[in-house]
Length: 144
Ligand SMILES: [Zn+2]
Image 1 (cartoon, rainbow, N blue to C red):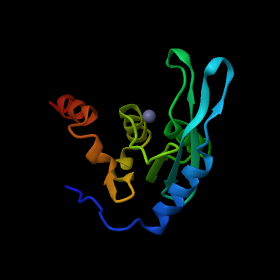
Image 2: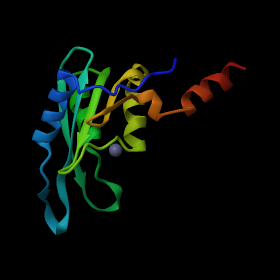
Image 3: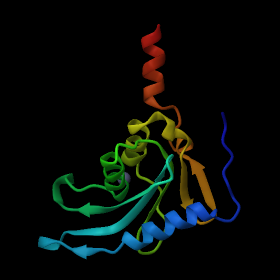
Image 4: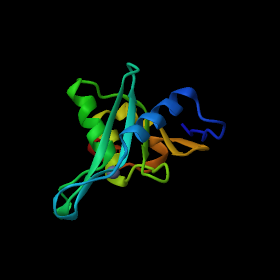
């Protein structure tokens, strides 16, 4: 199924997610020059609830993205199905990184249909950001 990017004005639901992501986004200093909050994210689940998160930027790759912490908040409530996701830094809307795309998909395959805000005028489905997904190839290969 091919999805069509939405190019119209932002829906009220996405505007609300964007506002929440912007509300939690505010970088603050941790020890030794590290920081948290440079990116804020919000996800809306199938139930209509919204969960937010912030990134943690520390050394050795042990920090994580804002989407990652929003997903952890969602999982605390035992929800897994996301219908929309938004992330922002102080200046712009940010697409999820490759790791977050995988995370969103792996917590619930239905999240392939989640709307992802890439810019104020561009929304795509998560599946469009994960073409030729390895899990699908793995499933196909195990059926043979
Ligand atoms: Zn990420």
